[in-house]
Image (cartoon, rainbow, N blue to C red; front, top):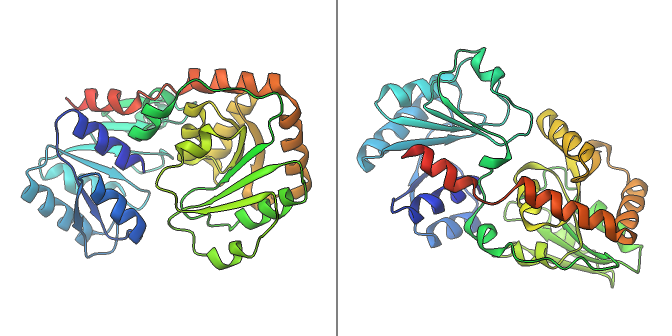
Length: 317
């Protein structure tokens, strides 16, 4: 999704984009091609030397100016191969844990990365760090209108990314379905593979939506959302929706803890430590606290202004 966001901004600036993939769910394939992004299939193990070779060959065929690389499986050797072929490399990174970083630009939106993890590994790339460089799709840049902070915040959105690998959505739905005063909408993304299990939930206060074309309307129409950090966290903040965020890895944990300390989100801990009773208490507290939700709206939009893709494209030019 963040690559698609960058692709849209590149197109808006007059450029063309091709997405090279080895794996892509059908629903995302349709979404990418609908955006006017051409698709290049890579028939190799992702991140391996054959993948690097195919990527270079396709970049030459397309006469690419930049190769954008996003994914933990693309290590130092992959980056070196692409850059040695004469292409400028933009690395979208989360963990700063590669052996070295042969790239021209590195984008990392995480809050407290000051560049030291990259510099101590010899990186000479220009660093675009922090939430000013969050990559948001066009729908978020256009959809962040004025938000009404309702006195009672009982409209709840549950969205745990494209695949929800821990299958937490049914557990959250079960916990909230017991609270008849809540109006709950649960979103299942394009990579979610437990649809039959989720469809068994039929509580009167629960609506389940599968792979909607846009999630903006749901974020705009909700008083608070339950998420699992990652890109969804930045999307939610840009929309000004109060959020309760779980985390899946050490970087997400750090980001959510920092944001929680600032009063921007509610830290729900790691997904593997899910506690339904704790969730219900936290949701109810936000339902009743107009002031807390108002503060979270203000702080979230101050932090993520939706202009990150524009700033990254400008850095490439």
